[in-house]
Length: 425
Image (cartoon, rainbow, N blue to C red; front, side, top):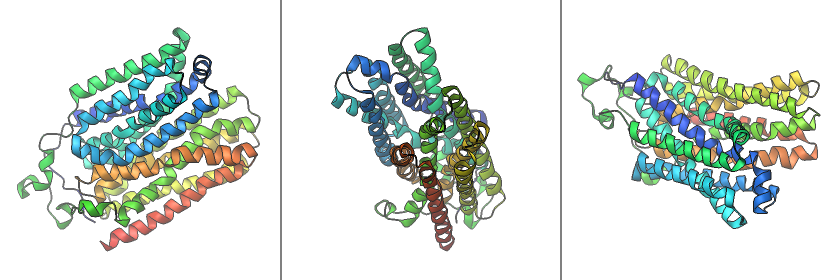
């Protein structure tokens, strides 16, 4: 396959990594809204008159908003640019935060939840900007750092809300997070550009500007826009990523329920969630660096990154076996099991998105990032319901966790087919 042209005049490394972190912090604040909402369900139910079950179910509507926004993100980015996208995402995240404490209508709750989910439209845009700025040799690591911090909002949001509630009130937890999101958005708008100077002309550089010139360094051919969605390559990529979101969502949502079903206390369950956080962060960083390491030493860069992605799914299958058969005896074994399955499930968060610039022309990357990420996020509302509700609460946790292994096996098979297809192109 064709590889990205390498330019001598690289953008500032400090500026590039600043963009990685500011993008990640903005994303983290958006992801923090999930646990912050869950922390206040009791108080919100008492004030609004809406049952806690309906309030919690509304997060499924929010997940639908996330999927829809991700799928159209690339098209919107190409049409309006990153600044308009960020302003919309900030409003979509903040306005519901200001309304929720005063909510008393179910229909309004569902609409606001969908809107809040659509704030995720900024996720693939942030990834594209990072890939514009960062050096090719660090694309895997940079996208892994971004994803790791972004998804940590699922834990940090609860910590932030708990601190604000203890110091002030549950209503203030909504307002404080909204203020934080606005502040981060303003900083982003002032300090971030979509790409370094001259980036848009990278595909048109002269031979004197290149470090190396070869058939592999010319660039990737554009897919006709009307044919992009119809290509099997795009859908194979999307399915190869699907097991990542499925497993991560199942673990982060259902692991506390699984722990309780085994008879462990709330304190022990709280400790168990540290394994989830550690596993996610460590996996993202290690997988991203591993992808960069092997890609730099491979003549076939897209295949190298796909093979690294597959390794994570192998870990998921192994860890599911360990979780089902070895974790019921002691808390220590459950902790190790949770760490292993989170590590394997999160591997794709650091390894997947660095594949896309190796396969697609830069003008197509925003669209492909949104579509593949959006299809992957379909697992967000479905996986917890399958693992925890359809099977877990009926005492069939083994079958529930096995779905993660099945999805991983499907993604591995899809990745093999994708490699074979790319080798023929």
